[in-house]
Amino acid sequence: MQVSARNALKATVKKVVEGSVNTEVILEVAPGVEVTAIITKSSAEKLQLTEGKQAYAIIKSSDVMVAID
Image 1 (cartoon, rainbow, N blue to C red):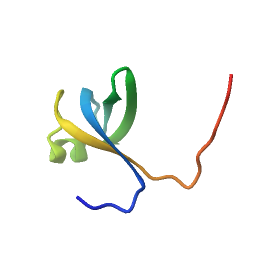
Image 2: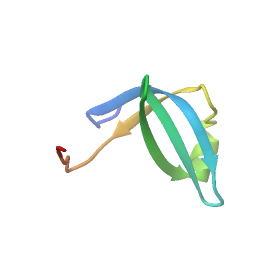
Image 3: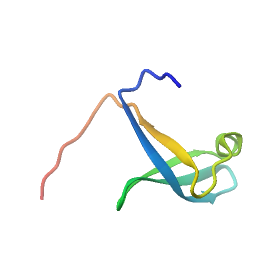
Image 4: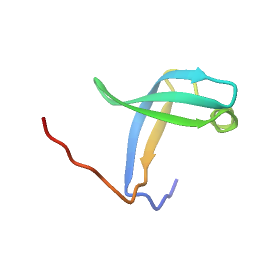
């Protein structure tokens, strides 16, 4: 796999919640660290996403925000 995005995080699919149009995919990138993605239902089906499957969270963004408490 080759992608131009600089942030590709290897993860495990923790949960898949199918909707009528979109699917919510929760990826665990490290113990207790999760990334949630909303993708089309057809994309989720094409990728055959199931709990426990290895996947990548690929993050491409023109902006990164930093916050503190």
